[in-house]
Image (tube, rainbow, N blue to C red; front, side, top):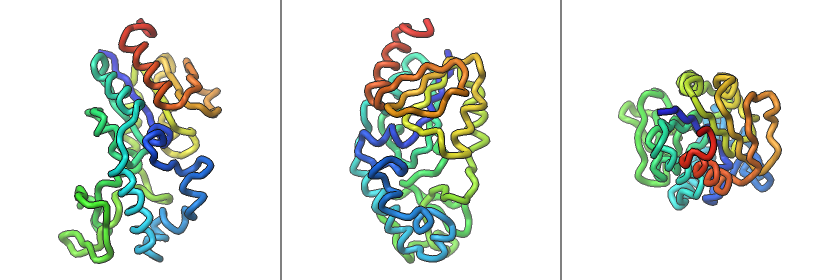
Length: 232
């Protein structure tokens, strides 16, 4: 069974109504990243940071997987599929994807601000000041902030290096170190990039660029892969 690795970014979830960060009208036009998504912001104003992520969490809980999420999950009918995502939502899992690696954390989890190994699933959309872990430290979002290391990066490298087919969808390839994972994919592996915008990908070998939104582009590609219409 061929291994398909799907590398996803915010554009996959945008069609579910979840705001992207970098596009026009995105979250960074409403918030200064340094005020809500850095360790320094947490130290300075944890209430603001919690409020920002509480809003994001509520939005995720109300959202539903879209056509792209479901198309990715359908690939499991014929392929060994692993999703490596920059997204912090759970829409891939809700659509049925069984093997998902979150590079930048998961918004539906909280963790101890003192012990990164203490991670808790959240049933509510809200983390409040005073919500503490079993060791007594304030709970924080289980998110990789700007300036923090990416704990799952090396695992992502390992997964991407084993891909027989590599699909890039909904990412600008501008966020590092995550964007660097593309460099670990075998040169001979067929690669597909799905995005309605121009993406700097001229250096990627053996690439087919599908200039469509995530839902339409991924649905069409999944249909071809499952039917043997490509890579037969």
